Length: 164
Image 1 (cartoon, rainbow, N blue to C red):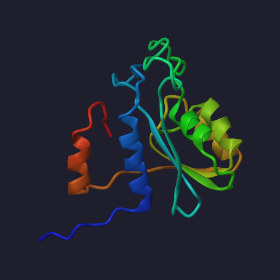
Image 2: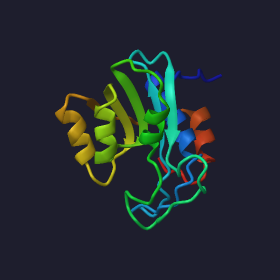
Image 3: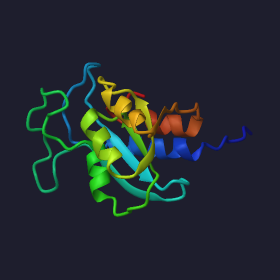
């Protein structure tokens, strides 16, 4: 019997962000032809607790649709990072963010003002300015790759609209 290889906490939280992206109601099509579903998980500095989660979509109580799905970066939906930060009740410093797409410049500024020390991402946003802003103030940024884990990869193959 093949021994199951344990994934890292970083990969565990990123895979949670992927699952959250499946809740997105945003219908904007990215340059790659895929709907831009984004998920986000915020943890404390030692990765022992989830502090908040979010995904892109309209504000609570409003219709689950974009105002203008053809407007890149401004379709009317809140970004996953905005949703996660707005729900985070922790004021501790050095929080860590896991987001399926690297932050846009506006979200990067929100991250800077809310006590983060590191941001992990899977895909780079079309505009790298957000990453540049984070690095400029000393917030570490790091792409993360998912391991070839037979159990998890089988699960994620079934999520519609997600292309790692």
